[in-house]
Amino acid sequence: MVDSRTPMDALTDDSHGHPHYLALDARDRSLVRAMLMAALRHRGDLEALIDRFTDRPLPGGAASLRAIIHLALAQILFLDVPDHSAVDLAVEAARTDPRNRRFAGLVNALCRRAVRDREKILDAIARSPSRAPGWFAERLTEIYGAEKAAAIEACHRRPAPIDLTLADESPENVALWAERLGAIALPTGSLRLTSHTAITELPGYADGVWWVQDAAAAIPARLFGDVAGQRVLDLCAAPGGKTAQLVERGATVTALDQSANRLKRLAANLDRLGLADRCETVAASLFDHGADVPFDAVLLDAPCSSTGTVRRHPDVPWTKTPEDIAKLAALQARMLERAADFVAPGGTLVFSNCSLDPSEGEDVARAFSREHANFEPLPVTDDDLPGLSSAITGEGFVRTTPADLPLAGDEARLGGIDGFFAARWRRRV
Ligand SMILES: C[S@@+](CC[C@H](N)C(=O)[O-])C[C@H]1O[C@@H](n2cnc3c(N)ncnc32)[C@H](O)[C@@H]1O
Image (cartoon, rainbow, N blue to C red; front, top):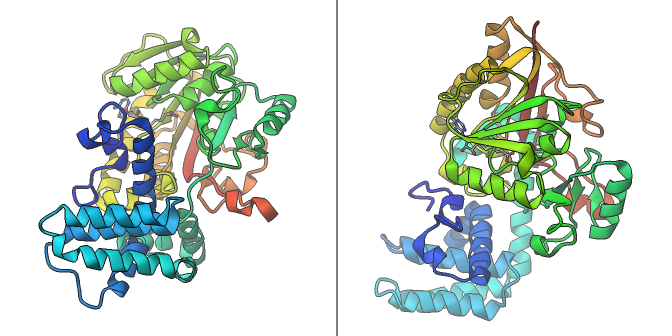
């Protein structure tokens, strides 16, 4: 997967995933996902551990042997899987492959050593510097400085908590559902679950009371303020978290996305939330779409490198490259240019994405402002973003990283937020 730079989401998609994955039942699929997440989240740590555990390098061409050991160590160290199951599975996998059969004893010994020394190993990993791929670690340091980059990378070693957006965000309803779900009410208006439970079984899921959306991902739609009665165009809309926010706040929304499959997910999500009949969907590229009447508000939540979501997508630093980032930045500039065409005079334009890299955020927004005198920057203020003023930059952009929104005391392990960027303009009349 990493060698072929295939994103984990593509392999574990429930309709278009890898055939071996699709052959599994729901329980095994979630186990496989958990194993992959742990193995990727700690890829650098586990590779270093394998090197330390083996006196001699593993034989050349032993990629599959290494993968077997890597996955077994991920389970033993980071998952709530019985040790004997992880060890047996690894030894069996080695035995059934003629290339690896003679190493089954070695696999067994390494696994048992990890079981025996688990606490010591975990302690050493927690104290060791990040072992993210070089390009990623260097870029984070260049952008954020050594201290903040280390804090961000420490967050990348932990799974992200699950945040919910409530359809009704009135303070009474937030308090009611925080209590009902045993969740933390974040200052931004989102709820944060305190344990990883089966989402579809939680109260309120079937009734469409809330949907899963990271607190940072909920910010861009909030930047439009009161959209009741407005015509809003959500470009790049699927799977629809931001569309749902805009519809819920009383806008008449056109949700456009070039992926028909992802739009199907958007439609299903809006259906569960009871919002489907208040939103028009369009399957098209924004470059091909035309609109006769301009919109009061346009959101461009553009495709990006997703480096702000490494806690949820630990494959990103291993499957993306600096060249991908440069290409995406150029695409975003073209998309923003096109998005501007849809905005009515006096209307609002918001550009956002979940990259940590300013070349996909701040630089794109600055270049747009320089080249579009007819769009006046509308700096984000404390009132737009209660409780997260630290995420508002001097230029009035929103910039979050996983090291932001720390929580105190017993809740410290649940702190953090996805990396996000957002900028806002008004089209001059
Ligand atoms: C970051 S995701 C959007 C997430 C979404 N806004 C949400 O909150 O659920 C980016 C989306 O852009 C879509 N996309 C990429 N290129 C596009 C294009 N040229 N026109 C329209 N949509 C595009 C992708 O299919 C993808 O669904």
